[in-house]
Image 1 (cartoon, rainbow, N blue to C red):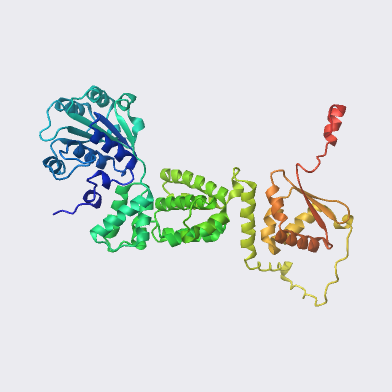
Image 2: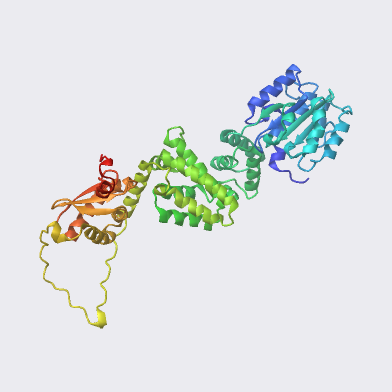
Length: 515
């Protein structure tokens, strides 16, 4: 006998076996028990959520001669007939391949024939949104006033494509995505029934990857079981996700704003065979769970997601989800999906480039980067340039240099020139402070021992970073070495500094009021 796929072998035969659609089962079973059967139903919802299975159960139940509580008995002649591969009075039609007017006209001509065995003849039209406009028009009158022995069940994943005239003639039932817990419970039941060796965590991973579709989950289980035991390793290989441990390692690098390590981990995942589309979906699901954990709405903490969520913050998690959603869409349009994924990972670690990111998020990211840079070994000293004309350089004097004398502002020269020289020194001594310091717009002396540094009005985040203890200390030391004397530093943003209005007053005179 030919092998049957798990989703066919374990298709539910009773209402009680349907997972995750209790709200629909209750209504349909109640209608059968009360004898209030409608002539047309519309089952809509995501793929693999039980639309066709429930349609078959309903068709069997309305014809059962000994039903109890709306459930088919499974023993009477009608139940045995309708449970066969090709029941005479239950007609399944795939509208994707039979979407023309002629196919619907054939249905219209045959509905007047009485059922051969059952009480009702049931027509199940799957993917009904694929019917052409002419086919819908041909079906309309029959759907509105069918013979009393005919029931139509229309199934679709895209109900918005159906004409309003069709929708208004059906009782509509919206199927929801099946929860991870319900899918896991069903997978456990199937695995035990088939005698598979499995890890419970692996079944839950399959349930998460199925995105609410039980049929997809059973197909993945079928694929994993063919290689032996159903383990995390076999599931990761089937899904192309690279494994939870490697994924969480990548997320740990992202939440620590460690760009180098994040790219290396991503390259290792892709090099091990991880699928780009599966990987970006897994990242999205992980950051979604982190968003829940960041506000205390979740209680699972597998892989240390809770700690990473607290470090990354709620706003950063929301921003990460928006980026991943956009990049997943771009990935479908781009042949180099790996490059799109790399840019997505880099964008997650660059809140300073996102105008929608809060100042707090930007500061947290920059502080994390400062902490990472402080852990790096100091940069090697730059070798001195070779003297001109190949002449040997003079040996360095072993006599200690005298301490630099205190200079007045006029002795130190231009403040802007001093600031630029200090930046060169800072770039080698403290690169983590060099970046924000280089964003300054101008520098000016205020008195004998004060240097006023002005930033643009939008550069408040850089000022906040320079006020951090580590950066402030590095800046003061570099400035003292450059100027030869200790200097106090004050930071101003453009909106705090008073603009020079001399030219404006000269142009407009007393018509301008200085505020």
